Image (tube, rainbow, N blue to C red):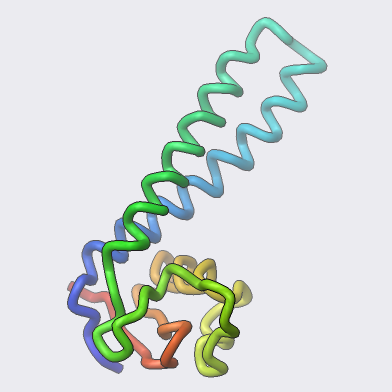
Length: 122
C-alpha cells in the first residue's frame, strides 16, 4: 500500500463530503417535519440545506484538485467509465462515494481508475 502524497487534502475532501451528506439528510428531514409541525421555523431547515449545498460545492472544487500519482486521474471524480474492479471492494459504496467513505473511516482508499491502494496517514 502506497502513501498518498496529498493525504491531508483528500482527508479534508472526505470530511466535506460526509458532512454534506449529513447536512442534506438533516435538511430534508427538517423540511418535512418543520413543514407539518412548526412552519415558522422553516428558516433553520433552509439554513441546513444551504450549508449542505455549500459543502457539496466545496467538494466539487476539492475533487478536481488532487490526482492519483499512478494514473494521473482524479480518484473522487468518477466520470462515465466503469470503475476498476479492485476499487469495488473498498466499501459498500461504489465509485467516488466509496473513496470518500473509505478515506473518512479508514484513512485508505483504492483509486477507482487504476486500482492502486493508498494510505492517507500523514
